Every structure is written in C-alpha cells, then in structure tokens.
Length: 91
Image 1 (spheres, rainbow, N blue to C red):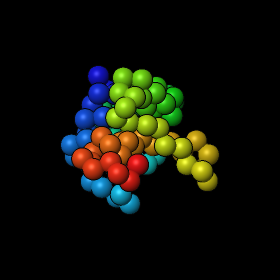
Image 2: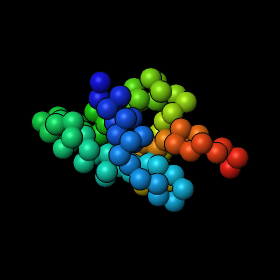
Image 3: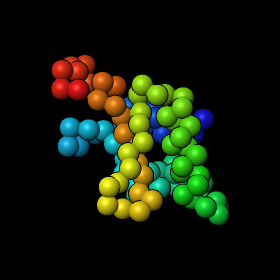
C-alpha cells in the first residue's frame, strides 16, 4: 500500500522540475516520515529501500529508482518520462 501511495503522490501532486518528475532522497525520507507515518523504524534507509523496490516491482513502466552519482546511499524515485507526458518524442 505504501508503494502505491508514493507512486500516486508522484503522479498527481508532484511538479515538473528539470523536465522530470522525481523525489530526491531527502524528500522521499520526509514523505515516508510525515505522510506515511513511519517514525519509529530503526533503519529508515532499509524501509525506504523496501518501499522503492516494491514500487518499481509493482509499476515497472511508471517509476524507476534514481541513484545519485555523487552521494553515498542517496536514492530517490522518479516517474519515467512517458508516464507524465503525452508526447514521448524526447525519450
């Protein structure tokens, strides 16, 4: 349910930045803590990893995991370009 909720949040409530719809690591952590209500988890990184992997498993053609090139353990989630836009000529 959490994976479906974060995917729906990206599709409906998130705005386009740099021609992409994505949540970086801090935004994802904040969303998990505040909106999903998971505050007492011992290892928030593991919870985030499980939620993001489950979202990709459930919706492989809609979302993907984005890993930071410069940061250690910095992962986020992004919509694939064709999931948000109707014109896919740039993909």
